[in-house]
Length: 392
Ligand SMILES: *[C@@H]1O[C@H](CO)[C@@H](O)[C@H](O)[C@H]1NC(C)=O
Ligand SMILES: *[C@@H]1O[C@H](CO)[C@@H](O)[C@H](O)[C@H]1NC(C)=O
Ligand SMILES: *[C@@H]1O[C@H](CO)[C@@H](O)[C@H](O)[C@H]1NC(C)=O
Ligand SMILES: *[C@@H]1O[C@H](CO)[C@@H](O)[C@H](O)[C@H]1NC(C)=O
Ligand SMILES: *[C@@H]1O[C@H](CO)[C@@H](O)[C@H](O)[C@H]1NC(C)=O
Ligand SMILES: [Cu+2]
Image 1 (cartoon, rainbow, N blue to C red):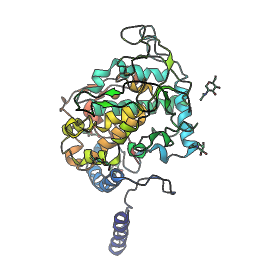
Image 2: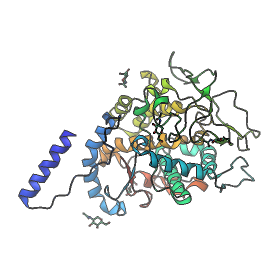
Image 3: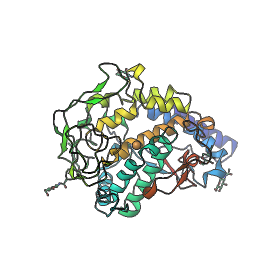
Image 4: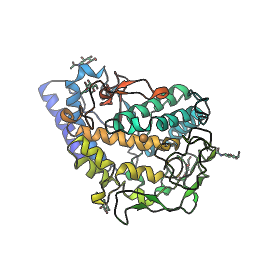
């Protein structure tokens, strides 16, 4: 902060002396009213790399379709939203869950509402979405399409919030996002016995994420009455009733379950994310480490974030977007991909894991228009200019 202020003053002085108008440095728009979450090391690294991003964007101006850091919309951390803003977001999610689906319900009778359309895409397109080159760009367009549905179909006026995992790394169930308040994203599930989550490839005791205090139905918060319909497909909780159809696409109405898990949350502390970004100088390694480092007994922030939510459908690889926290988690994944890129934009903005062919396409069917995979590499001007957002 002090460094930024000094640089700003210096720029101002130089500007006045030279007589040139000075463009104020771009600033993030964070809450600074004494709210209890101070900026962490990843927030600071992000802030310090914005200058490099500005320089990069100035060079590629022509291909940014008019989107700039100043005009880009801001996706905010949940805890940085005011309570009325949180409530507005929640209302939009509930609205999406009350609208009819667009998917073919003869083929997919389990899709009961517009929200389920998105869950269904993740289930039917799981291999496409999670292949090595697609994980980052496909989830980027997937989130963007969801945000667009909330705005266009449910009148939401904000943007998709993200979840800075570090803010819930200790006592996750006590933080406003999970505390079960009407303005939270739902509370923990009731306590049930389950054996924990196996993490293949890890040595004892890291071969399992131990069960915590939840695992049963979520009975508090705005999604307490949510009915989960599709799936399960890759279930973690063995007592979830099986879907009547072997592909998981029939209606299987059941409660929403969670185990807001402190063991998983502990491995999402900001120092893990910081080490991940600093420790990978190519995109393949960055993605690989994000997905888990058995040699370092580190589950990886991707898995650890998913299992901070856990349960059903959150703990189901295929059906996980059925938990409304999914979008927050992948927002943070998208954000740290961006922060990784900003450390060296010239080299990192134009690389994707496993270097897909130039004409590679991502097709999320009823959830989003087809896109060229490479055109999703940049949140400023990507997807033919339709992407124009950054994270605060
Ligand atoms: C960048 O593009 C915008 C419109 O797309 C234009 O107004 C502006 O002059 C351009 N800036 C530079 C430095 O080329
Ligand atoms: C729950 O949210 C309300 C505002 O909607 C706030 O006044 C109250 O302090 C919150 N309670 C907890 C436990 O966070
Ligand atoms: C859930 O349903 C019950 C019974 O219909 C109702 O009293 C309660 O307010 C509902 N809760 C939420 C969060 O919608
Ligand atoms: C992060 O901090 C915790 C607690 O201080 C420590 O146990 C852990 O090893 C650190 N992780 C990394 C990757 O530095
Ligand atoms: C990355 O995206 C930008 C648009 O933001 C595009 O101009 C550029 O060509 C893309 N990179 C590659 C290698 O296709
Ligand atoms: Cu996914």
